[in-house]
Length: 221
Image (cartoon, rainbow, N blue to C red; front, side):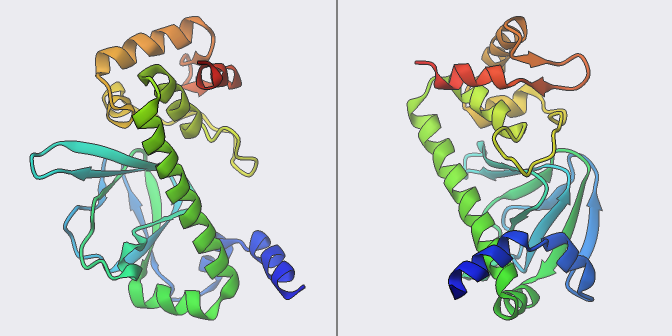
């Protein structure tokens, strides 16, 4: 009974309202599009909560090759590696659109998670959900053709299948960035986008709108 009550409370827990009502939790910082929120190799001393906007997580190899490992939307935590003892950032977080971020110091975040069980439950659930999504992306990268990977990426960016996500138009995202996420060339992305447009799966006359019919590409052989 106690566990059930705790789960129910955590599902109703509003992280943003909690942060707004608690003095001195963190600082709110606005970032313009393409701004670096933190860079690979920088000291890992804080956890971030994305209030508004979209974030790209990427890593660069010693040979200078960049790989996109995640795309985040509002109401997600990132930079939590510092809580597990990471002294420096393992990758770079970049604003894909104008973004508002709450920056919470490592010690403060540890204290909050210890003192507020509802926050702890939501934090763990969000981080686990993101890790599952990244694992699914890796499997997608290994086993699916690039056209299907692009369709899945567009649906994810449009928050398809997330009942609590607001209806949204995908923020401007370049074909170069899509190519990095999908793991193919920009020219192939261009071909697939034209195909999706002709088939009525996407509409880019007023921003990029992704239609549910694009799911047929993901489910097809």
